[in-house]
Length: 608
Image (cartoon, rainbow, N blue to C red; front, top):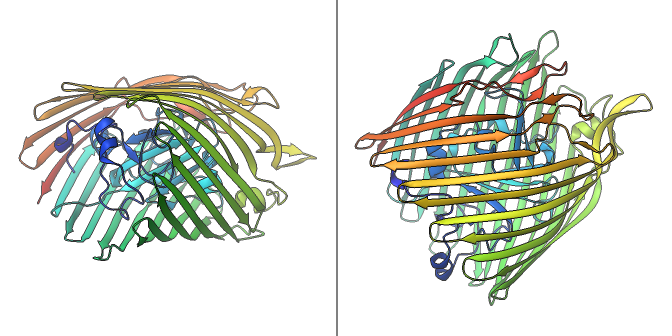
């Protein structure tokens, strides 16, 4: 678990999957590929193990060493400033947070935890603020439409978080930490592999008195208790089974009330090698998103959503090519104190993908059809073309279609929902190029996303409700690079975006048009030092572009010291310059301010 074991591990280094079931992947990377290009191996882009270049996609990988170095207190802080990713929230520490991928809405980015989809069926968005980064080993961010593989809502892209896996002899760890705002952090875990069986157990608690969310307001606290349990086994005949349980629960206070929350995923994955060239995989999964809300002066409310799903995938190799065929069935259920006109709906889908590798040129084609009980059938597709100029350089281009499904709130919320809504549809175009070398890499992409039937909340005929009224066009440029030289590791990303509502010719609300992130780390024997600069341009809090929120730049510093055998201490100081900034406003125009300077000191002991 210690970052000191991986001083020279950075985001473009190769990633070895412990087992096919453990990382929800299929396929393998050839030795020739691993030798000629040091690139991350990803599984989210095309459902199989590929290098980033071979995926023909815009992908960012956040490795375990990155997470351990930065010690983020929120999942969203891992994502903030990554290419094409914008984060907006109602303050720090467990408050409402939106993640915008390539300018699309927070409901238009799919979040997976070990292959299990996580979201609120009523609100539609993922619980970004409640996922504890301490429980994560790796994050893959795939930018660009992915509905042809993942169905509804993957308009902007897919973020997949992987929990800790185990390899080698059993080892454990205990972490204690404390910091500003009366914050405390406790964690412990045990993981290992014995013969063909692997296991991992981990628990974590973070609590804080929090900070004021508005100028002159009271401090609003947050507590998150989380844990994972995982067990996997590979039988002598090659069959594999993996069971994973993840849960996070706690309480967050906000202006006007508080929420008790719980997020849980349960996944059972079975792998069956039918032949040497045919792998069949079945995943049974359950996802829960529960909240009990206590608002000042109002009756308490409950919104509990549950999704049960079964997904069957088949990977068939022929020569250097591969076919992926599968089907999926999911049921959403809502149990709420709010009386919805409908409280359940199901979705049935079949999908397929063809990956053709002709050496330098590559072709990827995918198709999917979804039949939803609430809004009917919808078809999506994608085609991507790639060309390897040589061992280090690759060109790529793609066209993809996608759609966003109306949520239960959009369709059925009393005196608000609109049962006649159609899904948003989108056409996405992208051109990219990349270079990967022994000690550095670069990637560049330009894209355009055209959205029709945008679901917007407007007043029509004296009724304020969601309608299919607007069209949007989002154009952008993404640049990223990184290098390792000597004891230094540097990564830099920049994004420029124009998210435009074509009806009004205004920028879509709460989207920043420019952002920059720079990460610099250095190893000095048993000590490491690092810094992160994050900068974002201005945004508007309203659709009329009259209520402007200023841009900001923050500086984070970090240090670690392996001061004794098996002992490590780490110090992080976020927002060192104590910058006051906001990314959203309250309904009355008051800024939701984020935390100022925040220091956290942790000590970790590892045992074997």
